[in-house]
Image (cartoon, rainbow, N blue to C red; front, side, top):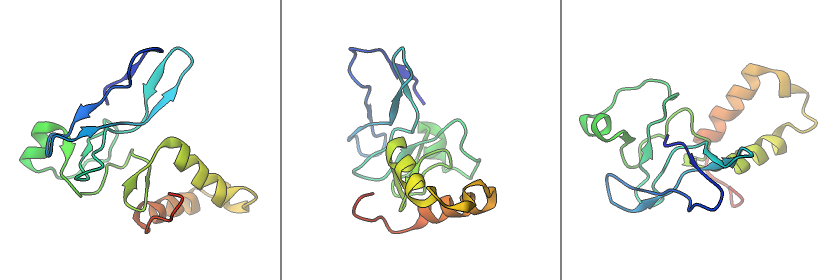
Length: 128
């Protein structure tokens, strides 16, 4: 991940290494500027930046060379994903709150991890 940007600067973009479309990442306000908190990803072809904290997996030579997962492959494990698509931290937080507000299983780590895994692989809904 690239880092962030200061207040008043333009949000950074990156060209997709596979299709050259303009790609964006998720950023969060940390009080002194904006910090990147999600991978750059391509809305056009489905490629996504390989995150420093993603679980290791086999990469193609092209993925290893450019630092991005191939188009339409699964995003990295550090990305917020709902229905196979990378979403913002705001969307992920809302999905978690919708599922676990008042839910006594919010503290059950295995249940929450299973829920997140189901979210990563489920069909997106209209609000996602």
